Length: 311
Ligand code: UDP
Ligand code: MG
Image 1 (tube, rainbow, N blue to C red):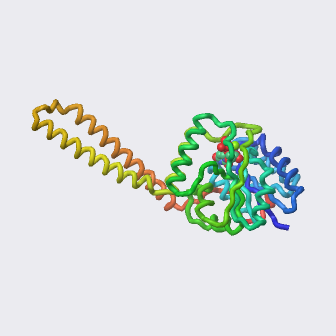
Image 2 (image 1 turned 45 degrees about the vertical axis):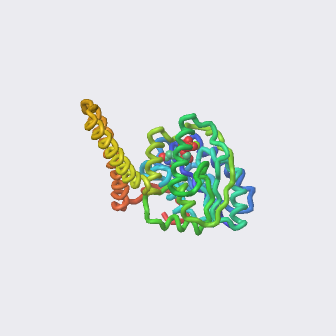
Image 3 (image 1 turned 60 degrees about the vertical axis):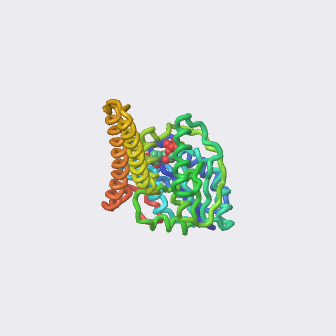
């Protein structure tokens, strides 16, 4: 009987843990495969870890690791993959917005020989208009940059052990799980699902953290923004040559006006381009700096003691 590991990143989810354990147990205990539920407490400020510990004492399928502070969902996913021992791993949100009923279907696809089963949102659930607009824009840009259609993708996916090992072997620290599972290749298939409503608690993303997530992911996956710098530079040179020619013509025709507004405008324009370019370059340097430091992606403070994989 094959073992399937479920990786469940959890940040301030005290109200959800027991409910999630119950729902998953009800579903998975009826299946033809064995399972382990690996909760990764991402430095929650509430009683999330206590709830995980409590559940793991009652049921040995429930396992948990706990970070020393909040390291983010990406780190939580990779920590879960690291300690999982299943022949395949499924990453699922703790709030069950990813409907668990898809898991048996994912496993079926895996048994048919697919190595990556992508959960794809057929509908984004009840998100605010702004959130939806930004998400669409982000995925459009990302899809263009990495040349893979990423719209409607999510972190809800099943990965074969081979794929998990490849992901864990990647040396980089700043990862983007959602895109990496495309990037590594392998035989994959998409399964559609409808996003459920969050049962308890609220979303853990603020607008600011989403923007940060978008910028980090875009720069971890593409160097195109650096090329934009060159492009913007070339455009501004062409513009200034055009403007120079126009000014000269006007000068010789004797219709030139006082040049003060043009100078200010040009300065603002060029200043803006330069600052934008420096910002983009600075961002990449910051990323290089973070990678070079080689600090661990997360720090595990404690665990439930029944983990079979690497700790
Ligand atoms: N999460 C996490 N660390 C964080 C933020 C979120 O592990 O810093 C987890 C969270 O507990 C949940 C999942 O990531 O299981 C998705 O988060 P959330 O439901 O808040 O995001 P949304 O569904 O609103 O996009
Ligand atoms: Mg959610």
